[in-house]
Length: 406
Image (cartoon, rainbow, N blue to C red; front, side, top):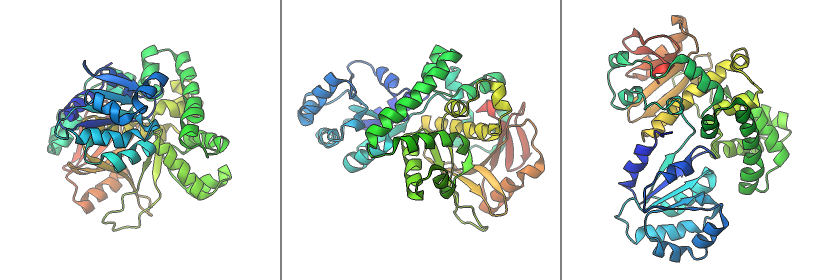
């Protein structure tokens, strides 16, 4: 199954001496490495023989292997990074020499910032997007955004994927292995073992002093917290821990890529802004497993349905932007008066407010918040993502786009 990240990987290999692939465990990093052609060689730092070869004398290893080397789960051995820096600097101007991967951003990104700053490009890999899961190319929508096309050009968009397939993806999530096996029973067993491995293996190895039972309960709580404004004191009381501990747990979940913290948009505020972060579980299939939803009908009648849909749409947008190598920041927006915008994107394409609705029809009174934001911030346009049959131009600065076009 082809990944949308492949062209970006090869582009960056033509520009930088080293590339880092980071992302949640089992999202496809190793598979992407296997697509590298000969003479590339891959070393897995979870295999004893490879660990012995690479770590016995890292400086000598890189002198013997000065290019076309891929090291999987590199963050497990931080002592490799100084040696990698020396190897890169020995032939700084030659691109495409090393690829490293890691499932944990806290360890990996710290090592990158300390040893490899300016020498490396980072790709944040994720599980499948809807179009990847159904083997379709990146929709034209993202090209129109990056090229800063006028709002009317979005009217040419057509659905990239049928609505039924989108709902199937929404319920199942994007982890590659369940898609390849394509069996409901396997999917549930895989999720159960995935969570157990994540806590018992990854978290305890990366954070040996953590309270395993408290963190396990915290992960279970994330299902009900997904898509909501985060109040650390409420979570601390429920878990029986301190607020700093909850903040640490949130950073661990975000840093290991199962959770995404979305900060509030506070720039040029003319109104009182809610400054609490928002967050969600990055994979909708993992969320539905934690909520014990066994069928799509269970999902459609669950109180978390709206939050689940909103989170899945946001994550899809961010994954596809990452796959195209677009630089951006993301925020949520809520005022003390109750006006709310689900997602604010800010990047080389400008400032784009995005409202997300599950329904096919959207009442105009529901769009007052995004219209006010567009006017106050002088945005080129805003987007309402819905499940309508076709693109709808609400006015000269606000357009409705079916999620099927994304």
